[in-house]
Image (cartoon, rainbow, N blue to C red):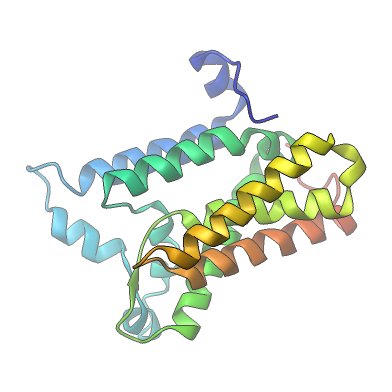
Length: 201
């Protein structure tokens, strides 16, 4: 399920939305440090800043999902999306997966805006990534017989490790992580109980 056996060409053909998200992440990341571009202006235009969101710059609830400054943050989130998302793009279809990814990220960013100080700034796709695992948690909770026991255990272990990582690491937006996961879980609950088949491409 999480082991990728496709060739590069096959992966692009089978998972165009994941490929597009990865390409956007790469382009935005490169734009933040290539010397011939106005790096600071790009970062300041895209980063989530709570008091600016409060002043009406609502795009900042979305753009931080695609913004990474530190290489380790960028590469970890990008690899995680590449490995763990294909099953969901197939299950949900193109529009369904886009909706899950954006909904989870926005849920995390909106919670960040509501619960953290006005001066707080944030960036990264972690809310969307945790939303992916929130959706998986909904799957194994409500459709557990559809997955082998080993897969269910792997998902739970990754979720627990993610929560522990959020709790012990400094400068981590744990609000964004937790509410991204809640958003993904809620999306999964709706899909499984009310929208099954609705998002097929």
